[in-house]
Length: 538
Image (cartoon, rainbow, N blue to C red; front, top):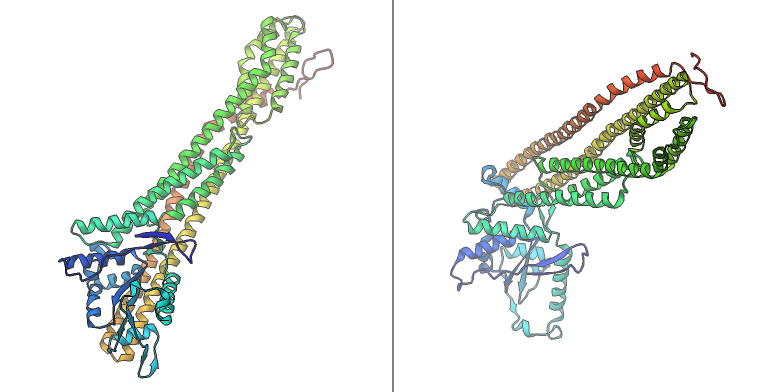
């Protein structure tokens, strides 16, 4: 086996597989020839059959292995196999056949009419002609050979290189190096265990390995992109959602490009479940990063105030108002700091609530305030606390709405990606079936020209059966598509309900706080410069 860059198609690698010859009496095992022939057929996209000398009866006898292929290869598993179906499925993965005549010269004519190479092959199946052998070809240089022969060799190589397609399995699955290795091992294991190599079983085994790798490749890409693009904590939840959506879309594209034959959708479900876990982890990590950043800012910004409180700087007449003024100043400084993340308000309110006891103590020790003024300040503090709590819950409600909206966007994007993939797969299937049908119609036309009526009728029945199976397959594809979309819809509803249930406790708390806030704000506090008056009713 040789692997080298394709000289004409840069996107392909040319794999040349040379097998031992057929019909060697020294091997003493004709079974070996049959299996070698079968393996070459299974692994190749272009099959070059070499024979020495003219096309004669001996050369045709060597091709008996073609007629034995149905005894050596299965296209589908035994439970689903039938002779007619196998014959049609073979067309989808059999290689192009090129017959190379070596060490001969031949006049490409018949009855005085020039023939093409293909016409000559057809004619050789019926007629015998005279041939001249070229001896000692391998020891000769090109300039020692007939110029027409050298030209024909060049044309032959050019034809093979330009017409050979990428090796593909049923469904248009192109074979790369890793897939070739798996196919070789799968076929050999089947042969060595005494069973027939089955294309369908090989494709299923390949799909299990490839789909598992596709899931891992998609998740790896998601993790890498999120780590490169996301700077925690994000300023807003929407920033994180947008990055997640972009990375998830790319991950899904990678999976859909590499996965195939995921007929029970198990690998799609696994990928979606892993993406959900990765998103949940990213969201929680963003919350932790925001909390840590905000806590550090609060310690740095409010440490002078805490030190002053510890020294008793505000335990004097008028100290409470100075304390409130300084606290508001530091609060505004904190709010101006960038990149605090989504926990900025919640962490701030938690800090302020933790210092309420100290603020209450300063208030009660302030001899410059009357009892009534102190009561007003207590009510003011309660109102501010309630208002801050409502603001925090409003932000939580907004984040919840964003999460719900993002669920809908992700759902629609997944539906779009899977729908496009199913359309491509259906187009590939229809293209393959059109090729099979065209070949059968061409064969039927030849039979009619030759007057083989019975064979023509048999072939017509096969064509009708093929068309019926195609219609059934299209119906099955439609049902499978509906199953995929239902799976996505169920997963979307499950996630939607989970988010809704998580938000319910907050909404009840928010309603209660809103009621308390309204009660606290039924009166507004009015302060004149240098004095404090009782609040007028509003």
